[in-house]
Amino acid sequence: MKKLKIGIVSLGCAKNLVDSEIMLASFVNANYDITNNPKEADIILVNTCAFIKDSKKEAIDTILEMAKYKKKLIVTGCLAERYYKELKKEIPEIDLIIPLSKYKHFNEYVSNYLKDNKTYNFEPLNRVISTSNNVAYLRIAEGCNNFCSFCAIPYIRGRYISRPLKEIVKEANILAKDGIKELNIIAQDVSSYGIDLHNKTTLVTLLKELEKIKDIKHIRLLYLYPSEITNEFISFMKNSKKVYPYFDIPLQHVSDKLLKSMHRKGNQNNTLTILNKIRKEIPNAIFRTTFIVGYPGETNSDFKKLLSFVKDFKFDHLGVFTYSKEEGTKAYALPDQVNEKTKSLRKDILMKEQEKISYKLNQTHINKVVEGLCIGFNKDNNTYSFLTKFNGPDDIDGRVFGYSKKPLNLGKYYKLKIKDAFVYDLFVEIN
Figure 1 (cartoon, rainbow, N blue to C red):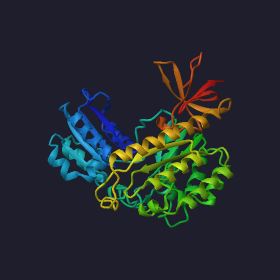
Figure 2 (cartoon, helix red, strand yellow):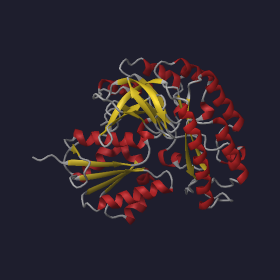
Figure 3 (spheres, helix red, strand yellow):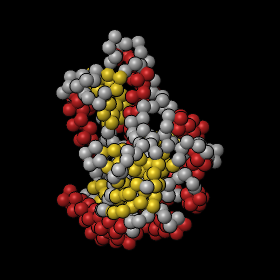
Figure 4 (cartoon, one colour):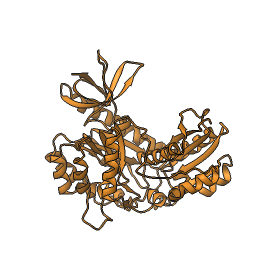
C-alpha cells in the first residue's frame, strides 16, 4: 500500500516550530512520509502564529494558499486558539482546527477526523528535527506570567509552566544521541525558568545539568527577561565552558513612562545597570535586543531617548517592531495611538542607526579566530555557513560564511579567521 504523505507549514516563532516538529513525529509514527511539496501531500497542516497583525495576515494568507491544493487541511497553533470560531465560520475549506489548548487531545482530534485507526500522539520527547542536522531548539517552559500590556501571548498560551528538569535533560540526551551538538534554549521568558517549581530549581540549575551532556558542545539562550537576570546567572555565564556568552534580552523600550505603561518591570537605570554589569564581567559578551516603536503615548522625546540609548550602548544585534494593536491586551484601548507613518519612520531611523553600529562592531572582529559549527552549503555561490558565538540560529543575526577549496563536513567544528565584515555578515577563512 502506498504510504500517505504529510506536509507541514510552520509559521511564527521557534516555540511554534517545536510544536510542528512534535506533530510531524506523530504522523511519521503513524507511517506517513514527509513532503515539502503541497501538491504531493495527502494532508497539509498549517501551524499558525497570531502574535501581531502581520503574523495573523501571514497565517490567513497561508491557509488560503494551502486550501487551493484541495487536500485535507488541518490548522493548529496560536491563530487556531485565538480565533477558533472565526476560522470555522469564515474559512470552510479548513477540515480540522486544533487549538493550542487541545494539543493534549491531538490524537483524539486527528484520529477521529481521519478514521484510520492510527495513533497520533503529541509527545514532547518525540520530535522530527527540522533545523540544521546538528542544531535544535529545546523548549524549557510554556506560557508567560509577565502580561506586558502590548502582548497577547499569556492570553493565547496561558500562564508560565516550567517543564520538569528531568524531562528537559532527558530530551536533551535524546537530541544528543541523535547527533545534535548545539542547543538553543527557548521559552517565552527563559530567565524565569523554575519560578513555579517550588524546589529552588533555577535556570542555572538546569544549565549545569545540560552542561554535563558530553555530546552537547554549545548552548545558546534566547529570550531573557532583563529584570530576572541575577548575579548568580551572570557569574555562571562568565565561567561556563559550553554556554555561549550571547545575551538575547528583548528590552522593548527605555522610556520609564512607556515601560510602566507596558507593564515591564524595572526602568532604564535598572536595565543599564544589568547590561553594564554583564559587559564588565564578560567583556566578550554578544548582545541582542528588540524594541517596539510607536507604542501608545510614545512622543518624539521618548523616541529620542530610545535612539540615544541605542547609540550609546551599541548592541551587536538589534530588531525593531512597530507596535501592533492587539485586541484583548491592556494597550489596545490606550489613548494617544501613534499613526502608522510615524511608526514606520521611527523604525527606519532606528534601524539605519543600528546598521552603522553593527558595521563598526563587525569591523572590530576582523582577524579574530573563532570556532564555528558548519551548518550549511550554498550551491549558488559555493559558500559554507557557520554558527559561532557571534550569530544566532536561522540567520537572525546575519551569516558567518566563507569559501573552502576542499569539501567541508556539515556538523563539524572548524577554526575560522574573520577576514572581512559587512553590516550584518562576517566573511571567514577556514583553517
